[in-house]
Image (spheres, rainbow, N blue to C red):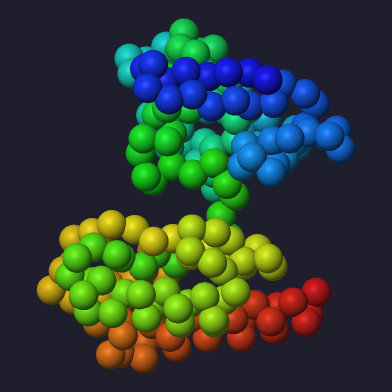
Length: 199
């Protein structure tokens, strides 16, 4: 086990074994990360090399890795730590601190449902239930088919339009009363099924 300490407040253990081993404990403990392919590793190396000698590059590198790969794998955190003279635990702490970073691959389509006070009071939980039913994705998880990720988020800054949701970067206000939000999800599901049938 590798033990990471964060500011003396909390600690996590990450298995130091080869994660391909059957006996690896990381997956059941939520720290399992798939082995990256060569292309993903090259992408990470290019990003690190581009920002290596800049002041305060950690967050920039993390943003770029997530933009390119869709998430931040542990291997990227190790490479960023090495390039910035930090520990992997410090980089992991940054990833866990900022809500926009994720260590799990996202679905092809990302749906955000605001759970801020205004949205919650106006029915955000009903929206989450509806999205779960339409997509098969649970809150803060990705559907088994890899098509949808459902993320519960805090205030999206559009309280006057509550409840607010985002599908692939497109905002939907008054999403409970309007059928636009539900229709957009149904349209995506139809298109994905059609594309899957052609493949």
